[in-house]
Length: 628
Image (tube, rainbow, N blue to C red; front, side, top):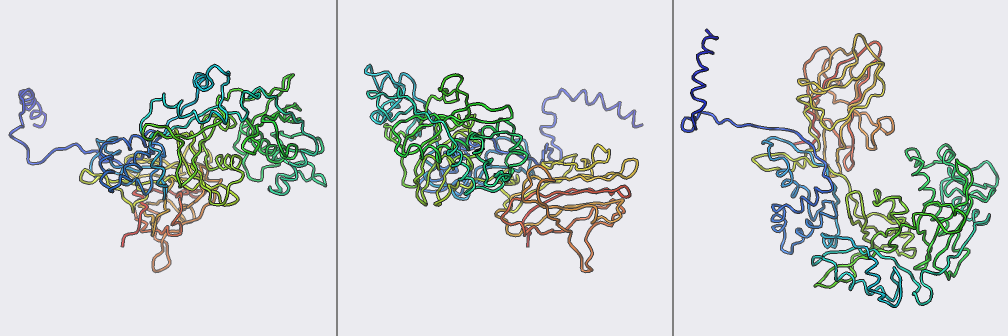
């Protein structure tokens, strides 16, 4: 009868299929909707910050926050700062972004957004909503010198003409321009750039100066202690016994790496690091001894350099300006028969960078009472071998130390540079000894929930992952020992993440299920909870572990871990499943209060042996503030 009924209804469906609005006035008792509830993650990319700043919804929202447009200006600056702050909070302006990018999601969906943030972004950085860059051209220099002289550079007498040059450049009111140009202290009428460079061949005493500085200022792990007195070190590479620079990469990596800097460097990166260090040493320790009152503007320093390929004669070019020596390109180059350096310096089209702003239709040097504003010039990028600075907290302090040797305590500089995320500005302050990045930009994570068509930041939710529907989420797996198996952890459509090392028998394994970074810097009383089921175990708490790390960087064997034990009941017994069935049991709230103020990684460490291989299932994991 069922088959006959099925056949009889087909003509009826066929007859009604063509009827327009068949159900328009005969709606069923319930409303049928397509729902798409998901738990997703997104890391903001470079272009996302500009996109967020440009959303009309966000512009209107920013204008409503205060009377003086402070928030609006900070929002517009977001395109260049690429960093949320108390002036432009992520929880306020990311919802519109999610709405635009994920319009199909339904109520109950969660979105985990990884973004850049800082606690206190200086107010003057609002000015940098629109930064552009301009490099002076040959025609620009011609307009400065006219027919009187042929010179592709500016001098002290012609610097003041930059605003006139920029007048022909299209720009918006308030736009900030980084201007790149060639500069020479000497006016063309008295020789200009035609001046012959001063030449210095390093001698034993010069290598000794480098060695003495390392002995006094660096870790003893850089010193070759086979001789007494010490005659060689591997920070600059200075060797007084041979009067050369020892840059044999294999030796540096094997014996002289107290800071573990070289482990992941390739040969090109190490060679560049050696060149950078030596250039600093020559500029600050050698040249000032030979030229206490410099008269020339260019200096070429030569020396013998011993490498894995043998000994060659090398040279580095330096300039003297603003009462200091600086390398025009921190890279090695052989003279090839002449004493003219063949370095990347020959590709430099500008050796200075200045910051200007368009105000009331006129270009002026940008100034603020809150900080000195500068920009990274092209030679620094050339020295780094690229067009961006990936680690400003490491590179820019070196630049500031060399450029402003007479800085005073509490001096503040805002530095514009090309980062991997585009043109960026960061603030640095001098504490009397070191330059420190004060904007304190960090990576943070916010979880948003869609409720009643609104995305709301769940400030008390740090991580949520169900592991449902074969979903691994942002968790990763690292196998330390597999004993012939292909894997231990795997996804399951019904049971979440599942670990087992029983395949035709027991296997001795160790495998880790690792969470994404969890930001607890603002946490008060964070807790972890999840549902777990365990079977085929002899001593579960001795075989499977919850581990916490504050320094995990991609390898579970190369960082520190602490064991997070399960809760105990009134009988001092662990509150865990019995280990002989498939029933899920919630862990209860496991306190993470020891990690408040930190960024952590949670890992689930599964171990097994030749005699026992448990099956461990995990789902519905949450890290959140404990609710009262």
